[in-house]
Image 1: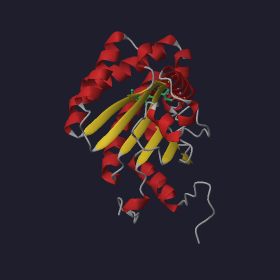
Image 2: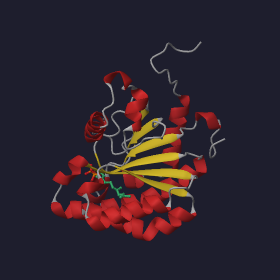
Image 3: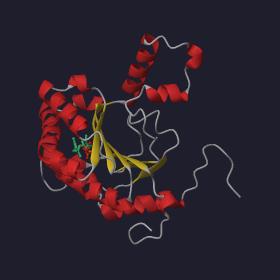
Image 4: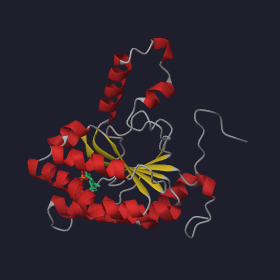
Length: 240
Ligand code: FPP
């Protein structure tokens, strides 16, 4: 049983990845600056983390800053960096106390030294927590992740015959984690936008027009209910 629904536990996605889109439009529709939308997005993340614990989702991956987001106006880029810093400063102890393991996926090098240090500290402090893993994709791009993996594979002198799916998994930021079962995109668009290109191969895709700051617990439950009704075939024929 999940929430008030009759979803059997084995039908609940183990790993959900979310493209948190629509913050800017949410803010504009209220006559607010875009950054107010991102701040409302952080508030919503708190709600969704609570809901994930309630629904016993074990891994949540959020797309917080893509490698393409550097092209946004400088003030917005700076604002998003500040948000990550503030989230770590204000929430780390609370997340740690609640058994959340924080992981960063993406290129740390592009961030300021202070932010890099904070991210590394948060990851180190929470590494043994096991209630919920929160992967923060920050300065993340799926293609960049694959390029990095291929470079490392070559640098390590791996013979071509040894390159298989397991080996590539091992070289990704998400090494050791199961692939997402469901990718949720808020804000109405129907594209992956360079998110988890390799890992999303067999994920169920769920898109909703609801803007991220309004995507609450009940919206998440709706997505899980839809996931539970889908038949995952992995390229095979329907089960009889
Ligand atoms: C997309 O909305 C959202 C982002 C680029 C940033 C998402 C960031 C947060 C929700 C803050 C949480 C961050 C951390 C670090 C925990 P958009 O701005 O593209 O919205 P629009 O399509 O309506 O313009």
